[in-house]
Each structure stands twice: as structure tokens, then as C-alpha cells.
Length: 150
Length: 304
Picture 1 (cartoon, each protein chain N blue to C red):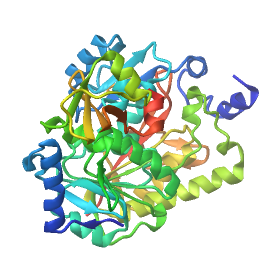
Picture 2: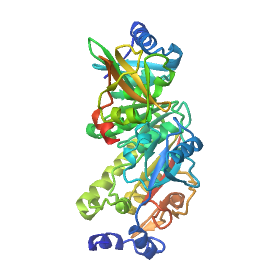
Picture 3: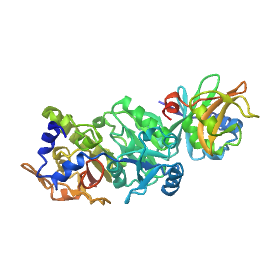
Picture 4: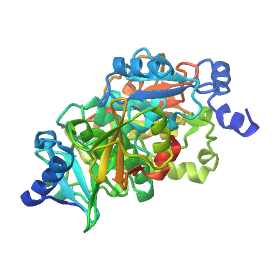
């Protein structure tokens, strides 16, 4: 069962989104972060939320926002669909051909300048999800079944 | 229609108005209906966006977020679906959440929530403000539920995994949606032939479970709170008879329901059993009345 993020953990999450993508803290106002074993969840805050967690065994809450490993954090597709709209850094806009290749998980040339690491991928102003930029190539991080179904 | 189905439905010959029209409607192709995710795009902008992308979309009168989608073989494989702009959902399946009418800030329980069409609709109707506790007794089934929550970007749903009859009583809810397992006769049109009601032992088991679930759902509802009981079956044993027990015991009273489509009233009696005089406040939807699948809906208020 996920647990509520401490103040320090909340700050770390806000700093990550601010430093990496330029997403302001304000975008996360009114939401709680929950720390799972390998995921960080985001859920709508509510005066009864903590009490419900004490009363019921909750399997998941809201949506997963980040996948966490000791070495890195990776934003989820669901999280970026909602909060990626506020991003000002490390955002890539694709054209039609690049979109097709991206959804097929084929590597495409990275537009410059772009920092190495995870980036937000956009098409016609819509957030598609997460890509990873490295060695001049951009690769899709959208889960295979979801990407394939398109 | 195969012989088995004719036998299954034959017992409803005198119960369903215009029975021949009903049989004819069962053979007609089921239209694909979708629900705009108004948390991402309002019905107007959604319609514009879909039309700009070349989709043949027709609004459904009476439910502003509902549309009929034509010419798309796999509505779950479009970019717009992936982006969470809509949910594929039967038209009549959209009614229980609308009738329950959750308000922002409330705490709602969906006791048998998977696969999650109604759960996500409840959250949408609340503007994703409040809390929806989505419960399903099978953990595997919550995977599909969670995938819809993620894709639609819903932040107010908590998922749990209790047996419905053993859901903890320590939390009381403002409203409860109960859409229990049923014989699913109403989905015949969708190509899911009902088999569960053909075995009398299974049918009896379903009725017992439904009665237990409704009893328990009323227990976790706060006094004065409201509950919607819905099934996708025509069987009175799983519909009026289940609701009748709760009303007869005085635990709850039936509330009137407004439906924006032609429909029938709940039955006053079935075989040798007479139901509570208020049973006419429940509704039955048949596929020759509304171009969707069959449904039964009751709206109850727990007595203080």
C-alpha cells in the first residue's frame, strides 16, 4: 500500500518536475503524492483522504506519476498527459512522419538543442508521452502495448 | 437468433412490450457509443476535434457527453482514445452514474467497479473533485479499471479489492453505485450470449449474491444517502425481486428516475410474487426502445 509523501519527498518531486521540465509547483497544488515501492502516485487531495487510507486497504490512488529506481526517475505517460501541458523545457514537437516512427518505437533524430534524458513528446500541441534522448536519437517510452494499439 | 436464446427470452413474451419488436432489435447491429471525457475536453470542443480528424460522430440527445461513432472498426485503437479524450461505453451503461448524480466533494463507492466505465463516469460527473472508491473483488479485474483511470487522467479514484459482501463497514458513503454480477441477458446484442441464467443453480446463486450485495451496500451508505442498483439483465428475479427485498424490509425507499429515452416501468409482479407498489419507479430499458443493450435501474434512498 502506498504511503503519503513527507514534506521532504514532496519537495524532491516538485524540484524534479521544475528542474527537468520547467513545470511550476503551482501545477501540483491540490494534489497529494503517495510513495509506492517502485512508483509515485498523484491523487486529488480531500479532507477525508488520510482517514480513508486508515479505514480501507487501498491498492492504488489516482494515477502513477513517476516510476522510481535508485538511479533515476521516469515520468509516466498518464502523468505527462495531465501535467506535461505546463512544461517549458525538454519538450519535443513531432511532425507527422516522426509521429508514425515514434509510435512504432523506431528511433528518430533528436531535434537540437535537447538535454540527454527523458523528454516530453508533443504532436499538434497534444502531449503524447515520454521519450528518451541520447546520442542524438529520440526513442519512445510509451508502453509497448499502448503504442502498438495505435 | 439461436434456439437457446429464443428459449431464454421466451419466458419474457408477456412481460416485454412489443415482444416481436424486441426480438427484431436483438438481431440488429449494436452502434458504437462513446463518452467524451469532459475532464479533458467539453462535449462541443470534443465533437469539433473528432470531426476535424475525420470521424463520423453523432451526438445523443439527452446525454450531452454521449456520441455514436460510425465507421471505426476498433474505437479503442485511435490516437484520441490513447490520449484519453473518450471512453467506449454502451449508451444505457451511462445511465446509472447519471442517475446517481454525484456532486463535487462527495465520497462515492462503486462496489463492483471493474472494468470501470461507470467509475470513471462518476469521477467525471464530479469534475474529478471528491473521491470515488472503486472496489472489485477480483484483483486481476482491477488492472483494466486502472488502465482506464490512467488513460482518462482521473485523479480522484481510490481502488480497493474486497469481496463486496465483506466491504468494511467503518466508512459510510454519500452515495453508492451497485452494478452486481448478473446473468447479462441484456448484452446479447453485443455478441455476448448469456449462459449464466440457463443453469438454474447458477441463476439462484447470482440472485443470492445480488441480495447480499444490496444489503451490504445499504449498510455502507450513510443515512439519507442514495444508491443506484443496476443490472444488464431482463430477469425480474435479479432486478425487481432483489430491490423489493430491501424496500420491503424498510431499509430504503425508491426514488423516481428521469430517463431521456423511451423505457418501461419496473414490474408490479412476476409469476406468483407481487412487488412493492413503488416498483414502478424503477426502469427497464429494452433494445427496441433505445438503440443499446438492455438494462434495469433502481434509485434508492436509505431511510434515516
